[in-house]
Length: 118
Image (tube, rainbow, N blue to C red; front, side, top):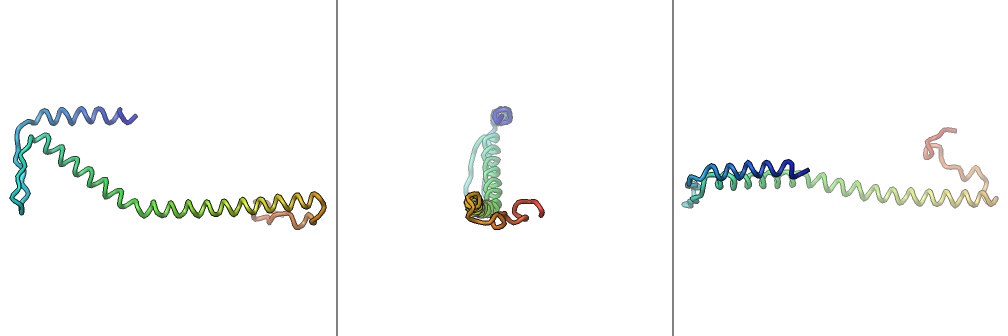
């Protein structure tokens, strides 16, 4: 599926670079640096730089959400463990009640836990 999007984009970029072979001199103001490159290559390099900068910004903004998701996942695992322990205790109490050791009234779970009333 990715190739359906990536391949036409790659073809367009290659055609763009090949269609603009004229040389251009790029300078950065306070520095006395100059870069001479074909126009197509220069535009593609700056486009790639802008893409990577944008990706880094998006990645940095999602860090707090990822941390929160990890904390929520850990809390969910803890709660699942507690629930499993409660269910095991309930099952053990039911087995004890079936053997006549505990009155049945003490074995029934709280109605709020089962989703039923009465």
